[in-house]
Image (cartoon, rainbow, N blue to C red; front, side, top):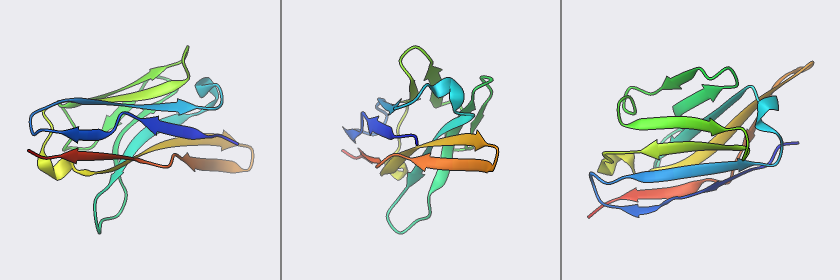
Length: 119
């Protein structure tokens, strides 16, 4: 069982920056893929950025060049640095961890953290 706890959300002005952090209850080296997803009001949950335990990363088009996802193996955290924030980025951001078991991959989710981009 993996527990993920997000932190760092809040209110930020357009053009500002925010750093989200997600703490894992287990050694993140055992988690194949960690990622950040967002869900706006009335929308489905969509990936923002993911990072594999090999270090490979993927970003949504809207995040490329503005967001950076990193893993800190010593602290068992995955972080998302968000720069040049836009109002359309207002959403609940969820941390996700994908673990490979012999029976297949299981996804774990945090409880989410609200990010509001507004004047």
